Structures are given as C-alpha cells and as structure tokens.
Image (cartoon, rainbow, N blue to C red):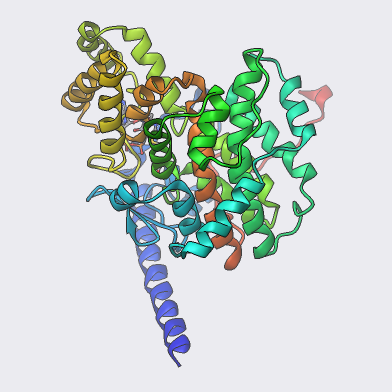
Length: 433
Ligand SMILES: CC(=O)SCCNC(=O)CCNC(=O)[C@H](O)C(C)(C)COP(=O)(O)OP(=O)(O)OC[C@H]1O[C@@H](n2cnc3c(N)ncnc32)[C@H](O)[C@@H]1OP(=O)(O)O
Ligand SMILES: O=C([O-])CC(=O)C(=O)O
C-alpha cells in the first residue's frame, strides 16, 4: 500500500515538473523569438553567421540551457548541495560532522551503501580496501612506460583504463560486482597516483602496507615514510571533504557513460578526464601555480588588480552552485593555517588569506574547495601537479555511488540540441566546389 502511495506521489511530482518545464520552455521560446533573450548568447563566430537560419528553423527554435545550469537531471539520494545556505550533506550527514568525526573508510562506506557501517561492516569494508591496494603488474608496467612529463591526471586516467583489462569483474554490471569494483578502484587509485609520482622522479614505487589506514598508506606510498598521526589525519580530512559533490561535471560524465550500460571502468575513466580540467578539479593545481607566480604577500594586491583589469579568471574562486562560502573551504583553510605555522613557512597561507579577501572585494566571489587545498597540499609536500590526482582518489567514491544509483533506475541520458546551422542544402561534388 505504502509503495503504491510512493509511486503515485512520484508520478504526481513528475507531472508537476513536466508542466513547469513546459511553461518555462514555452515562455523562453516566445521571448526568444521576439528577440529579448537572444542577447544572452555569445556572438556567433563569423563562419556560422554565414548561414542565416531559415524561417522553418526559427519556428522550431528553443533556447539551449547553456551549461545545463539549474536543470534538474536526476533524483539522487547520495548528496545534497545547498548553494544558498552553503550546506553540503552526504546521505543525510552534514559535511562538518563527517569532517569532525568520521574517517575516509567510514565515509566511503556511507556513500556507497547509504548508511554508516556497523563495526563489523566497517572492518570488512576496510579489509576489502586493503586487499585491493596492490595493482596488477601490467598496470605498473604501463606507468613505467609513460614519459615522466605525462600529466599525472593523464597517467591516472590511462592506468585506470588499463586496470579494467585485468579485472575479471570488469564487464559484470551487476550491483554486487560494481560494489566490489568500487572498492577496488578506490584502493587502486591511491596506489597508482603514488607509484606514478615516484616513477617519474626515478624512484621505485613503494608497495602498500596492510597495517595503515587508507590515508596513512597513501601518504606512505607517496613519500616512503610512515606519516605522523597529524599528517595522516590531514590526508584523511582532504579525502573526506572531496569525496562527493552531487551532479558536478565529472560525476555527470560518469553517470552519462554508465547510463549507456558501459562498464564502471569506462565511466570512471571518463570522469577522471572531466575532473582534470582547470574549471573543475584541475583548479587546485592552477591555484598553486598562481601563488608561485605571485611569490610574496606584497605582490598579491597587484596580481588581483591586474587579473581584474584583464578580465582574467581567479582560479579557486567562484562556484556553479555555491553563492556563499563553500563549506569545505573552512576546514582546508584551518589546516593550511596550522601547517603554515608548524612548517615555519606561513607565506603560502598568508598569501591565500589576503587573496581570498581581495578577490571577494574585487569580483564578489568566494573561494571554492580548490583554493585552500593548494596551499594545504603544498605544505604536505605533495607536488602541485598531483593535487588533482589526490582529489580523484577521493572523488572515486562519489563517482561510484552515482553510477550505482544510475544503474538502479537507469534511463539513457540524451538531451537535445537546438540546431542553428545551415538550412538544408544539396551536396555538391568536390570537382564543382
Ligand atoms: C571542484 C570544483 O570544480 S570547484 C570549481 C573550480 N574551478 C575554478 O576555481 C575555476 C574558476 N572559477 C570559474 O571559472 C567559475 O566560477 C566556475 C566554472 C567554477 C563556475 O562557473 P559559472 O557556473 O559559470 O559561475 P558564474 O555563473 O558565477 O559565472 C558567471 C561569470 O562570473 C565571472 N566569474 C565567475 N567565477 C570567476 C572567477 N573565478 N574569476 C573571474 N571571474 C569569474 C565570470 O565573468 C563568469 O563568466 P564566464 O564563465 O563566461 O567567464
Ligand atoms: O559541484 C561542482 O560543480 C564542483 C565541485 O565543487 C565539486 O565537484 O566538488
């Protein structure tokens, strides 16, 4: 009975949404044909202007939702991002509570399974993660064969893709197999990132240890020494904070791929590619480049002025959803401040807080998760171009949780485009062109 009520309720909500979308689309189409919305479009490049739209095309014209901003493309139980309140919730739990009290292992279980684990479930989950820490020899060989100049995210994307060739479960799209592969990928991505870091420096990769936490083992494989409790906790916090963020670009990419019923490795490989971009996860690497270029606290103000005057981008600022402070930033900022003091090199933190204030005054944008992640990871001795891989080794959990959710109630994702090209015309043989 209650199931039927839920179904009825869902159907009603769908109908309301449908009507709403129809009203909005109709309004937008009408306004567009009268010309008042057209001005929001980027001017068309010259070669495209050479094809004025036929009347028939104009009649059919709809307005594209550029970037799909504000479009609701999925129902999801994984995460809630409230951009107005600056609130981030994983499966009902506020990120501040998880940052304070949880571990990456526990948070991963929560995201993948929907509930916090019991002690036994956590033990089994942790053992499975440990079991999957070793990577297959051909994956390591692949990393060895890459030029050391390969961007780390490219190396990670390639190794993850190859790893799928050696996983007997790769093509099994059952929920059980995908859960197992999610854990395997979460474990492996840390090993791959650490191994590539060492290989490109001419060092031997460090084999994972079974007696360390996920964060502790990751740091150990990166640096070759067992990290302090503080350093382990810092990495754990970074991993918890980056694990999930709703329908961001890389997660959406993963869901689009999964929705075709392709395998999990394909979805994750695509997601890594999307995260790499500097407008998304790649921003943390760019932030460190900027801080290095600025060089000192004295130069921050002139950098902000010049960038503003040139209408440049401030990397690590602005957000597609948050209109207020990104709730993750405060944790990364506090840790960056602490490590700045502890390392006796507060410059990177000092430059960051000044920049945060000046950019806010200049363009009214808050910093996002990538901004303080840069100075923090720099203090932790992680090379700047590896920051996005650290992000990916955490976000893998969110990607997998979304793929599982997509497959549980799948529908191929196939939006439409609004054709604005040449009207229909006839083929001309090359000899006559
Ligand atoms: C993990 C993450 O992915 S967090 C985001 C990481 N990315 C960055 O830090 C890169 C810098 N930031 C940005 O480019 C943007 O703020 C994005 C991509 C994050 C969000 O973009 P949008 O959703 O279009 O944001 P918004 O609607 O506020 O942007 C509108 C305009 O505001 C201005 N603006 C927004 N952010 C910035 C910024 N950081 N610097 C300068 N101007 C900005 C721009 O004029 C922008 O228009 P444009 O994209 O055509 O240049
Ligand atoms: O949600 C977004 O668009 C980007 C982001 O902050 C994330 O993926 O963590």
